[in-house]
Length: 232
Image (tube, rainbow, N blue to C red):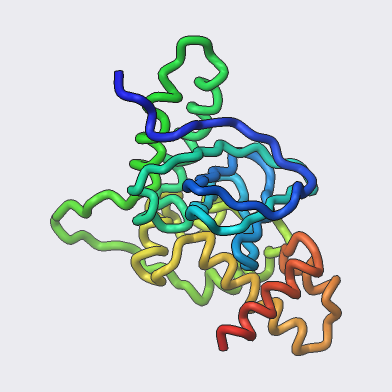
């Protein structure tokens, strides 16, 4: 039997243990809870079904005030260098993550051998198959943006967003990437930041803005606004 392309583990995150780096890729897939992550000074917020790929050598730190459970892969597999930050297939990756987390706890399981390859496959985009053109209900992105910004103080999921446009989570994720050039989570972060900018311009204080827009803390909002300012 071939050796596994990396090491899988199930980890629980709470308070920060400090910034550190590895000489290998570290891949995280959130199964439960929300994980605040900082990589090379850039902040990210990872909820269930979302993930991240941390390249070798990049300093990072984790924190979860409410506790988060993640499937973690430490690997030198070069294929991860071609992967996007988020899984291309969120629903499949989450289902696979829950299965692997369960299997890792079973004696004699092959999860450690085949899990890394399966996770990589779920993360990558599958090649498009040529099919006859068919009508697709257009997504009214402006309307969805308005609906979303009214609920950013709630923990929104891909399934909730997809339901608003009458699509499955998988279909919505594919349409979002194709039509906006962003993953669903990247689009959601864009909505959160756009509303935060509006509220700050109207004079709302940082703490209330962070709470209204779904940021974990005022400092997380401040860091996001600072990053945006640096990109403009």
